[in-house]
Amino acid sequence: MASIGAAPGTRIRWRDRRTCRPFRDDRRDGVRALSSLADTGLLIAALNRGDRHHGWAIAALDAERRAKDTIVVPEVVAGETYTKLRYDRRISARRDARTALALFGFLAATPNLFDVRETPHLSYRRSIELLAKYVDQAFSWVDAVVLLSADDDRRVTRLITVDSSLAAYRFSHQVVVSTPAG
Image (cartoon, rainbow, N blue to C red; front, side):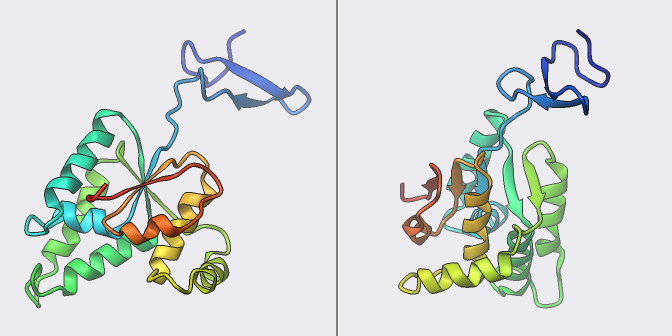
């Protein structure tokens, strides 16, 4: 049975024949599952050749690209990366934002690799709750949003970061925290 708008060879199951809305079976329809989520440190290291984790970051991104996996980038991570690249005098000249602006070109130039996403539902309240629960950890507010983003999307199985302290968080599903040290 052919389906309008379906790719050739795509199998679609109908979950409710009355509404005629298709339910895609991800195991057979060719839709890629998301697998990784990027933290600020990964993007800074990838864009800054002088960063001590630059080689690791490039290798991690290249491995995701070769595997044809998508890396989720929460909007707050893009914003924090821009801000850190823009105002770190070791990276950008004070009156020149071009180095920091390269981030947005980098994300836009590789749409098959990066998926920039909005913050999770109720992230402001939930991130405060997370920070209060993990008061003994050195998580920033952006770290809390990153952790919630990974935890909310069950397709994310890997968090790529330079911050090994994020491994202290207890995810609701299997998420490997990948760092340069391990």
